[in-house]
Length: 341
Image (cartoon, rainbow, N blue to C red; front, side):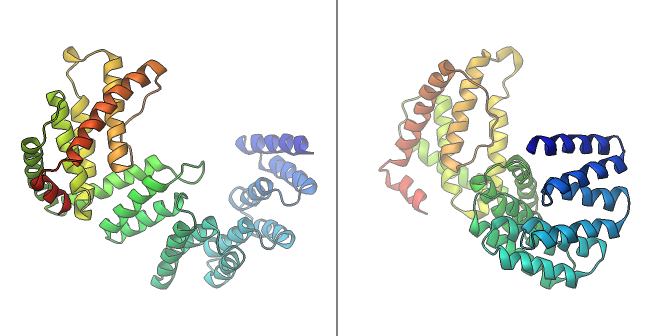
C-alpha cells in the first residue's frame, strides 16, 4: 500500500510541476481513497484547488472532510484556522480553530509557535501580545526548537526593541537544534548580526567597549606571564578581555561584531605571506574551538579534516587553553578585581 501511495504522490507532483493540475487532482484523490488522512495528499489537494484552480469552495471541502476524520489533529486545525484568517478574513472563526489547537495541544512547542506566529502578524495589539506570549511559551516547552526564536527576534526588532531581539537571536543560536523545515541557525545568526549592527550604530557602545578593552588587556599583559609566542599572548589577552566584558549585556552585540572582524583580520594574510593550507586550517580550527569554549557559539567556518589535522589542532588548542586558564587562575589582585567587577 505504501508503494502505491508513493507512486501516486510522485505522479501527482510531476503533474503539478508540468501544470497538469487536473491530472494531479485525480492522483491525489486516489491517494485519499487509500489513506483518507494522508497529510501530504490532502495538503497538496487543498492547495491545488485554492491556488491553481482558484476554487475556494472545493478547497475548503477538502479541509472539512479531513477535519471530520481527525478533528483534534494539529495540522488540519491550523490549516482551517489559516484558511478563515487569510481567505475568508473571518478572525472569529479563525480564532475558534486556533483555540482548539491550544486546547488539544497545550504543551506542544510547535502548536504554540504556529498559533503565536499567526497572531503576531495581525494588526490588533491584543492579538500581537497573545502571540508573543505563545511564542515565549513554545521556547519554555522546548528550548531547542528554533522557530519561535526566529519569529520573536523578527518581531522585537520590528517593534524597535533591538536588545531584546538580539538576546533572543543569541539564545536561539546557543540552544537551537537545526531541524529541516524548522528554520535555520545560520539564518538566525545572520539576523543577530544585522540586529547587532543596528544596536551599535544607534549607541556610543563601541567607544566604551574599546576603552574598557584597552584597560583590561594592559592589566593582563603586565600581571600574567604567558609562556607562549607573542601572537598567542595578544590573542589570549584580547579574548580574555572580551570574555570578561561579555558578562555585561550592553557589550554583547558589539563584542560579537568585533569577534567576527577579529576572525577576518586574524586570517587575512596577504597571498605571498600565506603559510601552507594545512597550517591555516589548524589555526582557524583552534581559534574556532576557543570561541566555542568562551562564548558557546561558533561564528567561524569549519573544515572537513582528517585525523592528522585533528591531532595538530588539539596541540594548538591546548596551548590556547592553558594560556587562557593561566590568566583566569591568576592571583593578581588588580586583575581579579577587574574580573569581579
